[in-house]
Amino acid sequence: MAQIPEKQVMVVAIDDSDYSTYALEWTLDHLVTPLTNPIFKLVLVHAKPSVSASVGFVGPGAAEVLPIVDADLKRTAVLVIERAREICTKRSVKDIFVETVEGDPRNVLCDAVEKHHASILVVGSHGYGTLKRAVLGSVSDYCAHHAHCTVMIVKKPKTKH
Image (cartoon, rainbow, N blue to C red):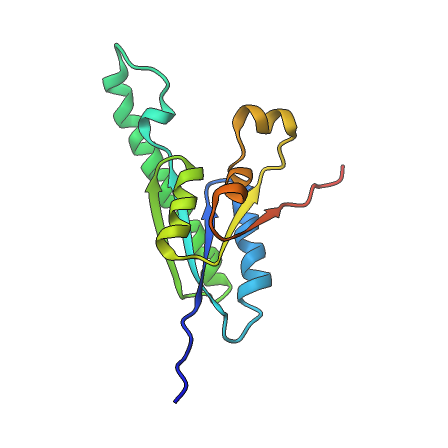
């Protein structure tokens, strides 16, 4: 009797940006829901910034600010996950695994690829130009060079004025 092959894993990066939402929706619409039996198991990964990375100072007053920032980051993570689940539910996609990992998104996503043995990583693109990308760093660019799988960068179309 033939063995049913295990589904490949697709890691999709999610955050609180419209670019991330677009990338998730595009992925579901083009690679998951049109198929009666999708070949991918979806793993949605949210990289929650650490409090220390979000607050660039220490000293007097830091002890009062850190718990507030931490609570806000946790609240944002919950909202990101709820929105992603809602998007999946609207498209009748139920077989998903969602995780939030604290850290730099570049490292979190590349680690998730390794952890889940992903065949593909999907990330949204903010569409930064060369200067902004050099200053801010590009998660999608980093992942394209360092993730040990295929990386699909989904760009949100620019609106015409």
